[in-house]
Length: 242
Ligand code: NAP
Image (cartoon, rainbow, N blue to C red; front, top):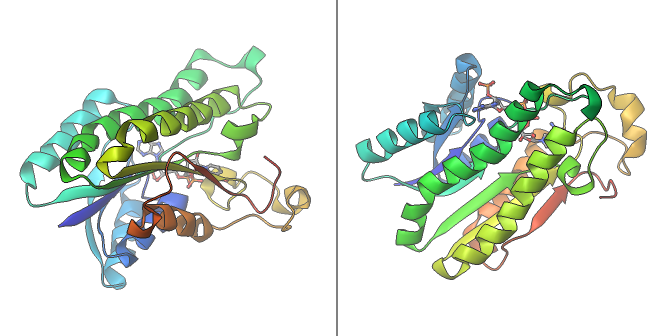
């Protein structure tokens, strides 16, 4: 059975990606950190649409936790194989560098960059053995152009962009593609503190995007037909210059 693992699948963009993956016929592993109610809601919505999946809780910022949860799942499910991996989990904790605490730097880097590394390394081997895989990393406009107040977040996302391009070159001949999607302003809990009316004037299409619009781009890059696209960053930002 072919599976798609989506990190941070309980809310926002990750929830929409889980629903998209299920609509594409995948058995979806819905990862989350702590919001079990929202993770269950994602699974319920997958099932309502005739899909299937299960919850797989682990904290992507914890190396041991990732390895133990994922290796346990792999051992207990020899008939299943993770064909699509979407590294979506991410947090922000903004502040000007002069006042940024160690903990703000560490937590943001660990969640996006370390999370990408340890989750991907754990599932990559089976993709290489099967000679097929799709890895899509959810990065950000902030990682492309840098945003003031986000040295931690911009560095984490730019790091994932560099790793996307490097890994794509390592595994291309094995049928595994590695791409990134870079959202701009998307309506989720992460942007709930922003004033859309005020910020939308900066966006050529004059509004924030939806999680479904990002999921559509992820679904495209995760599709079998996107086999000649690798090492790319696809912006989903309403035309914001990046
Ligand atoms: P969100 O609404 O805040 O949701 C974050 C999701 O990530 C939740 O499912 C959360 O799980 C999960 N998560 C956070 N830390 C985790 C950890 N350590 N381990 C496992 N799961 C973890 O965020 P979002 O807006 O959907 O963002 C999704 C991705 O898009 C992030 O990588 C973000 O950086 C990126 N992005 C977002 C925007 C935007 O405008 N929203 C723009 C550019 C890029 P729990 O529910 O269990 O907490």
